[in-house]
Length: 441
Length: 150
Image 1 (cartoon, each protein chain N blue to C red):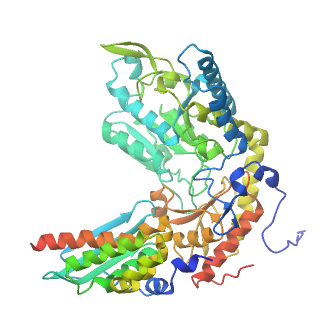
Image 2 (cartoon, chains in turn blue, purple; image 1 turned 30 degrees about the vertical axis):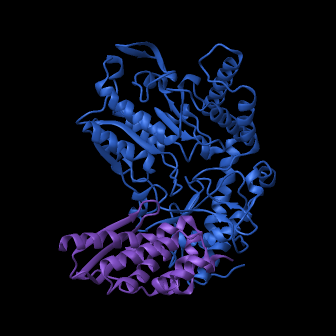
Image 3 (cartoon, rainbow over the protein chains, first blue to last red; image 1 turned 90 degrees about the vertical axis):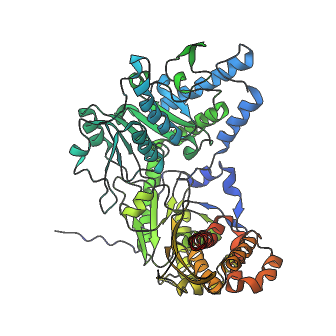
């Protein structure tokens, strides 16, 4: 016997796991208005996130109380600055389930990926045998996917140009997922490294990394995971991930700009030559040549972004208080609601997985008859901040035959009212440009 | 609502019914310009008769501002000499850097005709490049066509 359950019309609102009003009060910028007094509806966390007061306070605390260059000098401030910097490293390592000496601070994800790409080409010309283990050269292959952000594509193209290696890639299916049909041939004995995003910044897709990591390790290739859009939004434990590298940016996870992380398995990091060289990363310097510190110091040349690292640790603590499981569940509920709301608007097409299965909260869409820039402009006029364009993933928009998309991304302070504002804004754009049958509620 | 100041009716008309769209022969120079931050593209050809611009033909994709701008530019430059067209382009640049100052638009009304409607765009720094793309393409193409002729 089948039972028919009547369902009220319209998108469903489950109770949200996070207390949106309480969280909003922690973000000073959310109390400002934009475009003639409108409430700021910030749906662009995928580009950069807003910062809670505790992160801002942490940076200010550092500058007002302990500012000094860490890992140099013997005065009290230098000791305290070094202590604060290394305590922050331990906090961030703990967040990832990683060893503290496996966490390298970089400027952002982009720099972390370049660090690895340059280390692999520097390995080919390294004097020390120990640094040549992962050298990339002619005949070798690097594998990426068609859904990578430019940051996880262009550095590998450049590595191939420098070394004569060949770039190969996994394509996409029509519903916005990785096409793994030829994983077994694209990733083969010649593959030196597979670089893949955990969560697409444009499609929202969460990739099946287990299968990719297993295949890569089967053929002895390294795996670099771009976590720029996953680490801020879902629990990520490097011991579960199984990859060799994970990169992410602080500014997308409530932290300051100018700080990112490269996590690497210690054994792999230890076999890599440096990327940037100079102070802090050396062991002994003579006019004839120098030797280098072990990781992570080997990869942190110069005075580091100390206040930002401390700010990032405060961001991590903020996220830990909310709980990453709750953050993920919160965004999943919002995503389900938003996908339903957008499906109700004629002419709106979502580019990416149509449901919440293995999907994060980046929702890219097109509105028939209106260019994404113009959609974004009308939304902006309503106080709604979204991203428009190719989202630094030009091959993806090309793959789906659209010039660009409008993208909404969610975070801990996003509520159903923000999604409602987005849907109303899209209808307003349709009305303004005289397309569709949009009605403003 | 400030939207109307940018999306003047004249702009929306050019967007919906673009003037001179399509790639035509003959031409002395063809250029392809891209706005790398947003992916807007235009392919533009220039045909000169002597030093006069006899035709500007184009294909492109992009937002209403970029598409309307190339259409309004087409109306403005056909029949002008290359130096005259480039001077008009300079006026358009001036308009785009006016930050919404109405007196600038007023002074340029005769030179810019329909294109003066883009004055509202100058208040939105992120959109100025949309309006300028076609003018950059014209400058490039006419310099090449001019050079090829000399």
